[in-house]
Image (tube, rainbow, N blue to C red):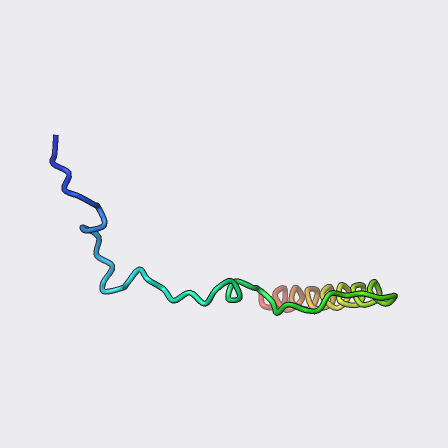
Length: 69
């Protein structure tokens, strides 16, 4: 049986890269900026408008992709 001498990490070569990365905290994990919570009687109007705008943008992008073929 071959002798195992310590950690396998000693044998890895990452070309000078370090494994430590600066951590900015959980804020850096957010995908989009946090918006204030919607409240009030117009809440569903605003949500519906956002949904419709997202659908329009998605259809536009799909049309662009279809045209690129």
